Length: 156
Image (cartoon, rainbow, N blue to C red; front, side, top):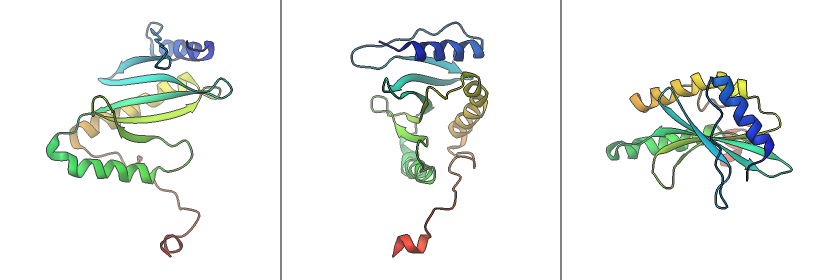
């Protein structure tokens, strides 16, 4: 069963996109979730976290990787994951059932702003559509901040 706060967030998110209220679905085996297609990009928002620390997970379908590109693309996605390392950072993965590349991000429900997520969707959709065409991620994905220790110290 989904929480009232997740359902309220879901309604506000869909309202901000100009969509009908979502059909939030939950089961004993899966969290409350709903999907939205935005500019040919499938998004799933799912309830996550705990009752004391509610969160929302956003899962973005980047698509399939043709077999002949996998040896080059998969390491590039792992590299992007490494460059985005920090608490709560998004990550790329392969969906366990479909094998499709997904981008997964979890954020605090209490601090979440449905309108801010809607505003971010154009950039997300642009990145997905670019990646589907070129298999290249925008430079903003994988932007690296200087680590707290030097690379030499880490190698020692």
